[in-house]
Image (cartoon, rainbow, N blue to C red):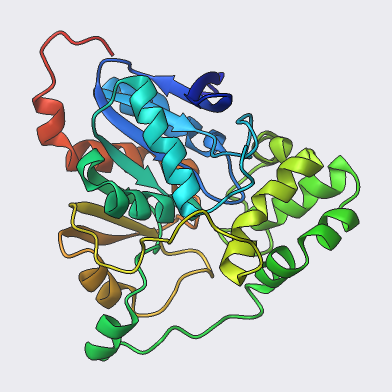
Length: 308
C-alpha cells in the first residue's frame, strides 16, 4: 500500500517527508537506505500499524520528497540530527528503530549517539559497527573487498558529478538505479517486477536527487566533509533483532561471529531464505511478524483502547 507522504518540520526551514500510520501506538521508526526511499517500507507499514505500532517512515534528507540538506551535510551525524528532530516534532521520547543499508548504519549511529532515545534496534541486513581490534582479537579476519560487486562505490564516491553527467536523462537515471534491483544481484532474480521498479526508481529520475544519494559514498571515500564523527566504532548496547537475506552478493564474511561482538544483546542473526538486500519489500510478512514478536512486551504495555 502506497501511503502518501506528509511533511514534518524538524528544524527551522527544514522538512522531512514521512509516511505514517498507527498514530498512538508504540513508536517505530523505519529508516531506508540506498538506492531506496521510504517507499521500500510500503508493504510493512500497514501490517505493523495493525499490530499496534505508530509507524513512521521518513525520506532521509535529500531523498524522495524530503528537503535537501540545508547545510550540505549527508553524513550519519546529520541524518541522526534530523531524526531526533523528527522525534521531537512527533512528541516521541524514544522509539524502536529499524533500518537497512545506509538506514541500518544511521540507526546504529543513532543508538550510540542518543542511547536514551532508541529503545531497541531492528537491522535488516549485515550492517554492523566496525570493530577491527575486537574482531582481530577474536580471530576474525578482515573482510576482503569485492571489486566486481562494488565498482559503483568508486564511481559514486570519487566521480559523482561525472557519473550524473553521463546519466543525462530521467530514463537513464532510473535505469541506473534499477540495476541495483536487477543484474547487480543485490536480491534474487525477478524479485521486482516492472511496476515495482517504476515506483521505486521514480524519485531518482531527478538529477539532483540522484546526486544527493551519492553523497554518502563520497563520505565513505573521504571526498566529502562531515558534520561530526560517525559513532559506529563500538558495540551496540540496545537489544537488536538481526535478520539477513541469504540471496545477495553484498554479504560480508564471518557475519555470525561479527554480530556476536557488534550486538552483544542480539536476537539472531536469522538468515532469511528467498530474501536479498531489500527484505521489507521481498519478505514483508516475515519482517512485520518478526518485529511484532521482538517488541511483544512493548505492544503489550500499550494502553488498552489506544487508537492505531
